Length: 204
Image (cartoon, rainbow, N blue to C red; front, side, top):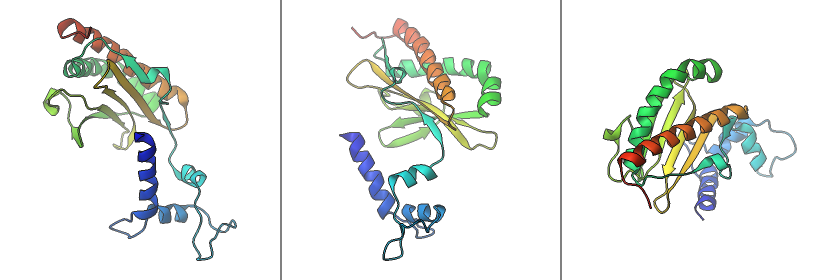
């Protein structure tokens, strides 16, 4: 139910919301990007926008499919806080090993961490930026040399079963880059889960 409702909400925003600065809606901005005059002008002088048009003007990104086996991982530990802390330590070591390759092959120069708790997004690296049971998502946002976001890796643990959802997203159309990032994320989580499950509570 959640995903269809989210999609419906996005469509309503597209047609109804306007910018405080320009007074224009997202639909109007898309219409200005598209070349008019292909026979779809309405009687009122507007321009009919299809879902295909929307996809055409979106920047190209490759994102992990929800049905990809790599998008789901069974974990041993029930301590999400401990798992995330272990993950961060592993990520720092991995970043040092891979940063030159990421720069040369992906254009990735830097990263920042964002923790999601309820409706809040808290930027910062380490347990000090998380509270409670830490069931929210954790994102590593990658940026280019200018700081422009290029992609991210994301994870979030289930509150009802020993499962973590995983996601990778990267600018461009090269599928191998998404595969590299999601595989890297899963490998780090496997190591973090092993360490957390030894030193902390293990699910039966």
